Amino acid sequence: MESEESTTGLSTAALVAIACNTFVAILLLLLCLILYRACRVPSSPERLPVLAPSEGETQPMNEHKYLLTS
Image (cartoon, rainbow, N blue to C red):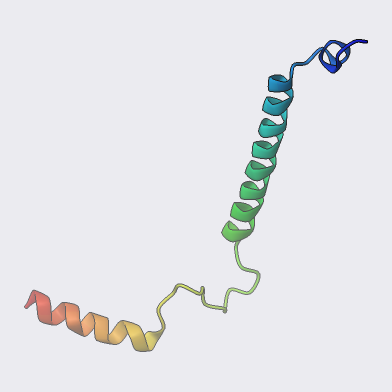
């Protein structure tokens, strides 16, 4: 009886390495997809980004900076 290693020509370590590399490639593709979707220009420019401070938050911060610099 022949072992599985001789019929496929690849050792168990090689098969594990191929599986790990495939998994890493899928994770990289997923990361690229997430970055692509995150960096797209918004379709409606009147919408503010989530991380942009509102006008009510920027005014006290500017007053605070003025008090520190004078």
